[in-house]
Length: 175
Image (cartoon, rainbow, N blue to C red; front, side, top):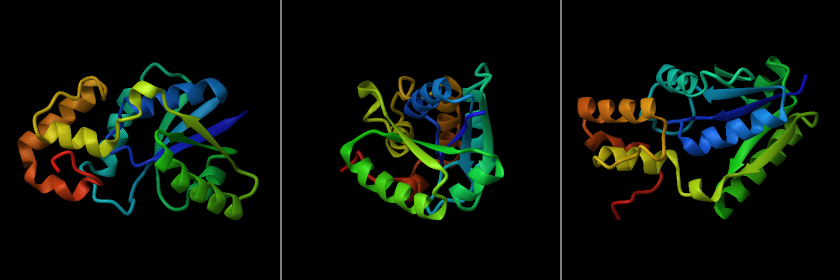
């Protein structure tokens, strides 16, 4: 069986992630969308919330499974018997980071291959940070995320307010 993982923070999961996952699911017998539980980022959603949002995103995809993981990605691959790591590339700047991560992972586990899929052009602008900021300002994110994710975003900002969100952004659309 050809099993791959698609690791990420998925804060929140968006249409770009969905596109990569669905295309990867055509290449492998099983794809495990692996939600990293404690990245070195400030996040809007808890690990459990991110897991639940990702699970709701792929209800009818028989060969896509969603799990929570921690630790090194290559160790998780070994734990779930996956021989491939799937990554998405949106823009040129993604390549350098993904290249360095792939080299490090290959050094740690040369038997695990990294497969990079290039996002579709119409989704190259989507990032978790931009989706969160647009939603926090009351903008329409319905073309960027599944409906259940948009609802979760709007509910979170209504409950907690948007002022505390700045820490979870890598870049800002406000500047």
